Length: 260
Image 1 (cartoon, helix red, strand yellow):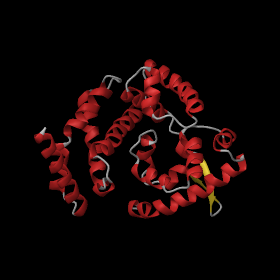
Image 2 (cartoon, rainbow, N blue to C red; image 1 turned 90 degrees about the horizontal axis):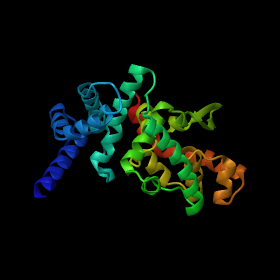
Image 3 (cartoon, one colour; image 1 turned 90 degrees about the vertical axis):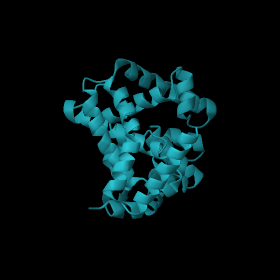
């Protein structure tokens, strides 16, 4: 236990050092320290496709490096939670590029379909969007398996971030336009650790945040959202437009930092 605590402490020290003064040597130390995370994810995904484990592992290190470069140790998130979507996303992009689409195992297809029905049922029962733990418990599967099935389905049909949410200077703005590096973050749409987007969402007024989450994260119609939060469909639309503009203001510094 003491050894694990020391390793975590050392890892955070290196992450802070890299954040303050990026260097290849520190980055390489962090890669070696977190290699087990890459191997674990590669092992899991290799059982769902025909690609060799070794290829997935090598691709996964690219995702790990991206996570190291983008991680902010001052935001209070565990690095492993932050890195997993980057690592897994890099592997799934690799599979999609190789085969055109990610072939989702039949069990995951059925699980995802059943999960959507369970989500709607729990949403009515709880009067709020259910979390992953609640959905997985209702399905009788582990939380990780439920999240894997969702992520695979989202990677196969990455459409939600392309939805137009408001007009900016006479041109349509999508939800994906409001967050940096949409190519990778669209894969994290179903992950709890999308720090930047969640931070922006959390700063919104409750009903505005609920409207955005219901429409873009839970695929509810504006009429359904209006009934849930007790306003008119037109008010839902206005709240979404206003909320996205507020999110753009919050996220603008990150967007400028990621520009080439």
